[in-house]
Length: 113
Image (cartoon, rainbow, N blue to C red; front, side):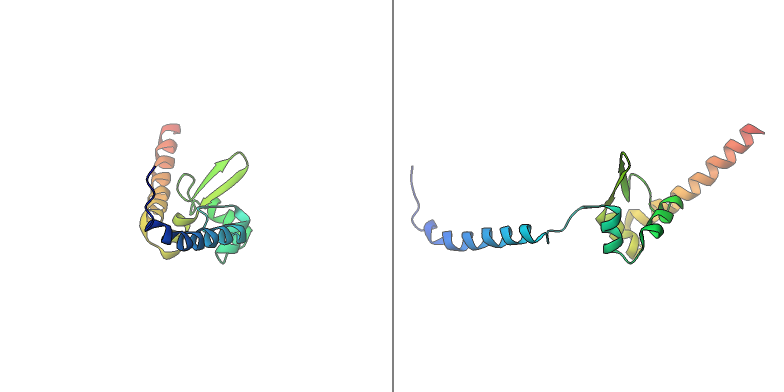
């Protein structure tokens, strides 16, 4: 095994980075990709009931903004950010989803008649 003695001088710098990462992880300040409903309510200026209404109104779309795991909802933080800013797939998908829903409902009503 060959040891590069020049690399040994990097050890203190690497140790500092490792300790900073450890402190960040222990403090819980690492950005999360998935948020619970309660965490989402703390992250954005909406109450839990308002978030539930966004789901009922299909403004938050399952499979895009959130995923269901049994009774637990997991919100995709980056898609929620896009929704808040009115950009990206989140906003257009939600609008398209509502339009498609209306068309499907019209077709079903025609078939039932």
